[in-house]
Length: 227
Image (tube, rainbow, N blue to C red; front, side):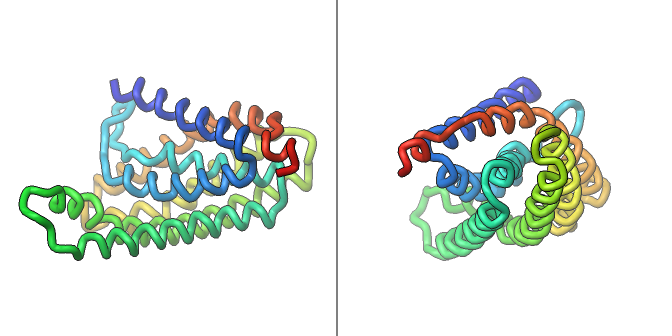
């Protein structure tokens, strides 16, 4: 059941990203990156069994960020892709700071404070790993994509998407998982999460490939009108 839900979630995410781009163009992609940087860091606190593997949620939301930056790199300029990376980075910092301040408020009896502590109490550590991993891997991704595009701008978009996403996600996983989970889970579970997380990210990269072709073919409505 988890597998079917996961595939459905992936399709819904990438379809939603495509629709956002159609109606809001580059601004929509910037907004998507900001939103999913936060969503991914909440979802990653939940572990599930997927295809017989122990995995965390958040890989789809996080993978959609790489799809968005690859789409920006493909259709716009490197400076726009860099701006997208900065937006995601700033969004995550703001999210962490605000939620830690929220947890400092004294709760009324019977409210959801303890549940929020369970979720958002982990966020600073996860966010630290995510900030470091996100900054390094996204910077690597946009520069590698730009380089590959300059070398062969008219062909093999699927190759640019798969190669850059696979390598940058490997870098991201190697950095993020130990920072986020060592000491929280036993060592063998952390290794399991690292391996399975990367496998899942590769599947996400394969699923999102048709969508980057779709996005490339779209002329956003706001850019048509010159807005």
